[in-house]
Amino acid sequence: MNTLKITATRDEDAGVWVATSHDVQGLAIEASTMDALIERLKIVIPELLACNQQIELNEEVPFILESTFTGKITTRAGLH
Image (cartoon, rainbow, N blue to C red; front, side, top):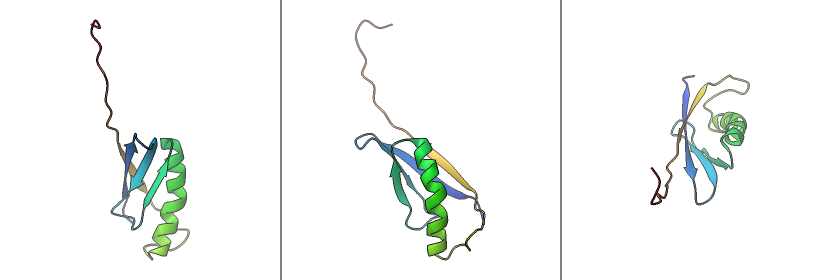
């Protein structure tokens, strides 16, 4: 199987990372940290792929996780 592309985006309002993918039908999970998200992905991806009949159980499937973080900063006068 080809390497799966997973996208993680930070939802600052909710305080979580959200993972989705066009390669894994139904994937939409969240976790408070990136490490926790990766651990959840290791469990959820194979289950979804098996449910969607994309793989057999116990098949090794590589994935890449690309993340995006968009934040805001406030500038203050007097800083150089």
